[in-house]
Image (cartoon, rainbow, N blue to C red; front, top):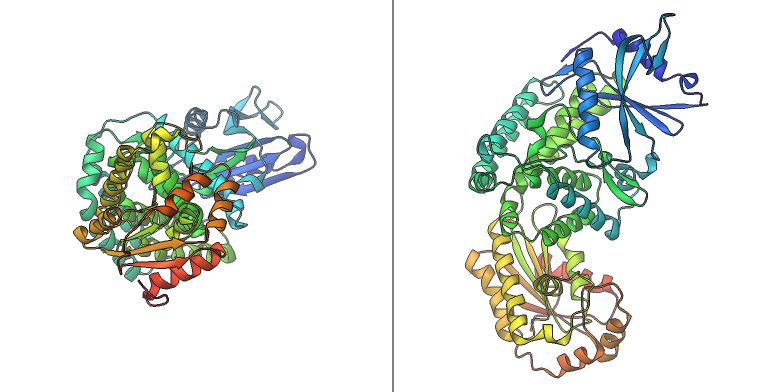
Length: 523
């Protein structure tokens, strides 16, 4: 790593760390490998470290000026309320420093509105406080950022772009003292295998215009709850190539970071919400690149953390090296995903199909878990309404239902073919519907497990009547009609579960079946 001497910015750092500079009682300071941030009153000021790394060069004042201006320009698209502008730090005729004003410019800073650090998603995740509603809101914010991002012409094939990045990471691991050669070599081999597996879909997505000028650094520390909604900030400003990527690669940073914060459930919700709202077959097939994307994102964190270790004192360097090694270990795990499987959950309305499917999804297959396909959501998509908009009875014709079930089959096949597990929940009242979803697994050669849920009529009626804000349109009348229908024989590949008790107990029994298939008698 090349860097200017620490004293080159020492006077500016001391000036920005002094409460008198802002007329406040206290200044808080945060550091990353590329920035120093000073929080004072209602404001925040961020300067670029005078460093030169293989992927980031802030070594001269002019480069730092350009980076500050570009950071404001890029991030005002996503966080207009947070970015106030780039501001000069100047030396006056008397030799003192000042924010703005005339004099010799000695440094540049990004001026931002200060926000509560507890509102950062990284801190919320550390407190295990990212619930389903927030996870869905984050997915919506990310998808909107991708939809509004500037499309970019593919300068090279998608596989070539990812290959160049992967090789850069492998070279970095070889030069960094934080990593042993064995892990670095394993990473290089694993990433090449995943790159070969995903090359065709990467090139197809690039050819069809999927590349966009994305955020580029979408980890939890760069998302904040601002006025009640998640806001993305601190997008990459120093390298357009690093930020001009496949949107799924952008999303993968967030999914990886959630997973590393032990928030696999939230990561699974984010992925599923993103996929459903996007509703794009090319994106479903793009999941074939997700192990590669997750592995590279974890690899990037390993590299950056190792570079940060080189800037710290002995104790800090030791902890940073330990963290970097953990990220590299995670990268290797993502690059060796579990085999996909298909799980189907059936039963009349009110049996808790969606609750069970959502609970099982994070633990199925490759990170961050299974794609959850839900007939209620696909029906809302079919009729182009919001998920909680109640549809009329005319939307539940045999023809419409057949189309919904056909969509479930098509999506399941696309996702499984991409290597990601699927859990599909629908009533599956007809034997041919159950046989059709099972046939998808047989055709693709993946493991299948079905669950058939049942409960007493009174329990079912009470549950559907208590629903609020859900995609299901089922009523008590619907439940009574479903109970009169003859579902025919339940195949041995489907396990009957009594779902009248707690959701946790049903989940425990289903999870036990998925582990060894012997905990509950099959019918």
